Length: 155
Image (tube, rainbow, N blue to C red):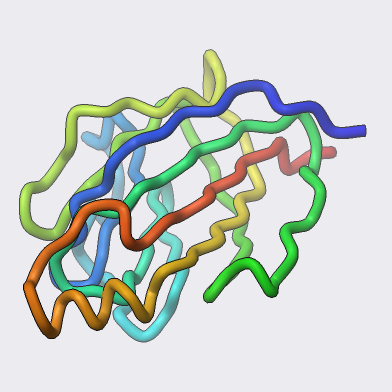
């Protein structure tokens, strides 16, 4: 049975309907955030990078990051507005949150002590509320929520 290794909550400043997770040491990435961002995909991937499309234009989303030792139990699709899975390779085991508006944010997310291959599942709730808030007041905090789960790909 899969065991939760660590859990971390971060805030992601969403700008232009997007934010990303990228290698903390991004000097060698062939396509750094936000280059080649695809706005029509909920979860996009590039080497060392995950691109996430939001329901709202400008707001601060709550992001819970979980690292598991094996595939976590499936999330009930009825609890989420969007879900997607992808493969992800990390050279360092450390990720940073990136915003279209502000660039790199301060939080560092630890997947492991070194690099490795991962599977990731991204689930999101509150997309319609974030979209409505963007149309009315412009910004909000914690209206849109994400659960991002990582586990080793080789299991």
